[in-house]
Image (cartoon, rainbow, N blue to C red; front, side, top):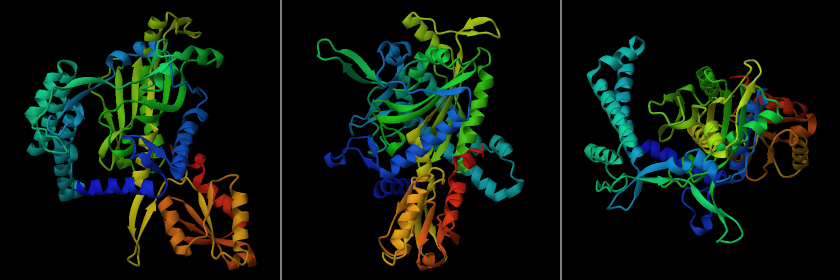
Length: 512
């Protein structure tokens, strides 16, 4: 656990030191769970967004984009259920005065039990090697069976308590002996529900202002625009509407850096299908979205599906793509079969029909919806944390390298004149002028070239291009590859093709 905490601290400090993420309003001691994307972070975030948009919208003829407003008519959130049901179960510790999500406390306790089972499995796997039958071991080893049975029982009791009586959740916390993570105190209050929406007002005066909410999700902007998009785009079911944008949740227990924030960005797609065909498309998008994640090369072992046993009121199937963050496996993306709940709810509250006429069936119906929703900030954290590595080199020295997927790297190449004289800076600037039309490139002339290499490694730059005195003679430069540190001598005219081959979005998405 200590090692994981150290890794996570390194991620947070590296993000700040190298201009990826700053605490918001830091000169005023910051604002809890709110962060600013700095000069390199904003580029990485933009590249992740574009990678998603290209695969989701540009590569699918039946999916189009939308950018709905953050402020929506307040009845929207009554219809969607957010006013009445968008709550977190919170519990306070009477001694520390700290507030926690009760369900998270129990889930983390259950995960510790699961980790004990996984350690037993890993030990057996190492002992038996290729002869190891994991499925048989899980069902026959008494200790593993006990761990997994206890975890299942705890989660089932939690799910029942969340729907029946929150006092049962408190009783479960007390029975398990769950303590305040910071102080160890077990002196808990009752569990209470807390609505997560931020309120605001619209109007020139306090007396006449209308109460509004900052949207807690982007999906409802898609649903209320369903007919507008369908008719104006002459869309035929099945079709999708995609959107990226900010959402706001008044998270009381906001922690783990940018994993859980009060202001965050979502990348969502709502796919409208015929009733009865939703499960076919649900499984299609589960498979397709996992392939998208795997195309980035962050390691198949870092992903897993978590199928929901307890479903939201609007869903008939749901699964999370979980990622192995430095603090364990957590939700990265959700795939949900939302049935026709949202469109029917907006029909009821607005009094307007939100139906589709299917010419093949010659009938009107309210489409069912399959949703894919990934947190852009969580995706940023997954990419950044997995890419940050400390390497020991052959000479015994170490380097910090941010091995970002080249397609996402904020800067694709840095051009380095060996010395600041003899015309080398001028040639370097000319190379930058040529490349910057196609790639984000940087110029770096400060310090010895070895130190500059290390700085670009830490920034995640895939290529360093060094201009030296031989360049004056034959128009060749040294191109250094970040991950292997291999150096090749190439013609200046070949640079664009070499870089393009490594950073092309097409080449990366073709891996899906």
